[in-house]
Length: 318
Image 1 (cartoon, rainbow, N blue to C red):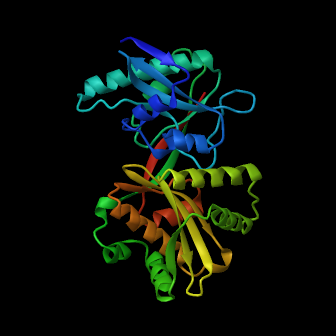
Image 2 (tube, helix red, strand yellow):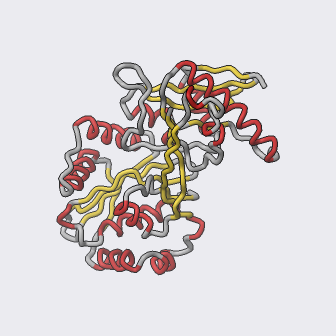
Image 3 (cartoon, helix red, strand yellow):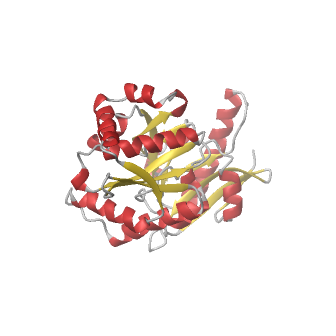
């Protein structure tokens, strides 16, 4: 096999390739990448003049690759071309070859870098075997992480879904519904940011100015490019209680931001709004809702209570 690497792929070529990869998510679209307001490069490997693999690397102020995942983003790792119906012995052999070449190319240029692989990326052996016989030359650290996936083909009706989820969630939903809460789409990114700040202030956490700007930039790009939307929940009196930002690609809806007014924590509005988002994704014909991480106890338990299934993914660094 003969491969070539391009360390500065064009956005157009990147987008055209990435959307065809089985490992694609909206987090790899160049419009989303631009909205993060952080320097990045799309790096690709070519085979016979076609892109066979790619990866996104973000860079810090000194021009070195970042060594961690930025907040409000996910699954920006290495992706591969679709192998279609290739037999397993051929598919996995080819994947090892192209990933090995990519790893050698990246490590020759960058001493350290970080990749967050999609949960759709099945085979991490090439990373684990890097310098297998000479670990003193550097090996990858593989960090096991989890997200929660809700298969939408299993949702046949709202009543059946409410009966299937945790009983507390059903009671909260019915409580908010009975109290006359309503949900509306909004383009008010300042409101989303305000509620998000309130959510963390209750936990005595201050969100930095740069993170707030990133959140609003992500929301603005998602709305203007029509791959995301803000939903806002209001009480019967018109008070804003909650807001969410969901992102979408052709297969999946992503629960990126959940924000609430602490004064309405016990109203059931968070559950009411979440279930509205879930059935919006169902109506859009999507396959899954991805809850974008279940890696802390309280948040993870809340997301699993909607019948999300744990799904593993890898963070890789060297």
